[in-house]
Length: 240
Ligand code: SAH
Image (cartoon, rainbow, N blue to C red):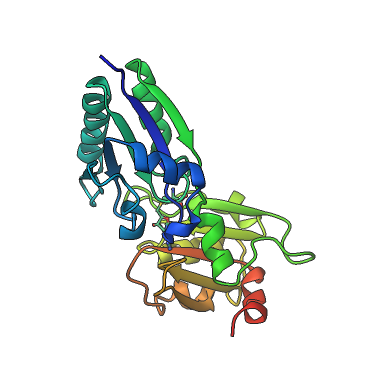
């Protein structure tokens, strides 16, 4: 029997044209596609028409159970000889537990190939007119998760020293994040941008200040990339 294979594929930030040529080719060849909540219909439409498409998006409170199901689905289909595309938003190894899926597949003797993707961490600010580095304004950026166990916080002091902070999965905890950054020495008037639906036709950008976010004055509902830093001010040069 033909042995299966797992492709860990970066689906990019949403616009299907931002997929790599390799990702597009492999999607056309796969038997099974496991996709996430942030996978857009335009990307999914590139899969082979006969492919089995399986939604494996995670919901709050069910992460562990869903992750166990993803491991099972990968093993079940790959050991049955199928080519499995594990399609993840952005780059497969930037959050989202792609590396764990890679390790589990290898432990079970399944061949794995990584197809990197355009991470929302870099592409989404850029598409909103925010360069993460800029001469004399920002020499460094860090990509930080805004998602951790409710009721706890992380130590923001080391991150507060970095010029530009890109926070993913930070919408829900935005008030606590802003408060923590201010407590760690960032200025209340420092500019902040939230970019929702990055790279898509309905992309939305909210530009504000750290102090306003800390006071709970900024309404954001969906997943967004949060950018904190002086580079946000560059935006006016690049957008109408
Ligand atoms: N592996 C992904 C990130 C997964 S974490 C990557 O490299 O992009 C999921 C988070 O990414 C979301 O909560 C949000 O913060 C961000 N995100 C992904 N795609 C986005 C998009 N198109 N617009 C805005 N934020 C996005």
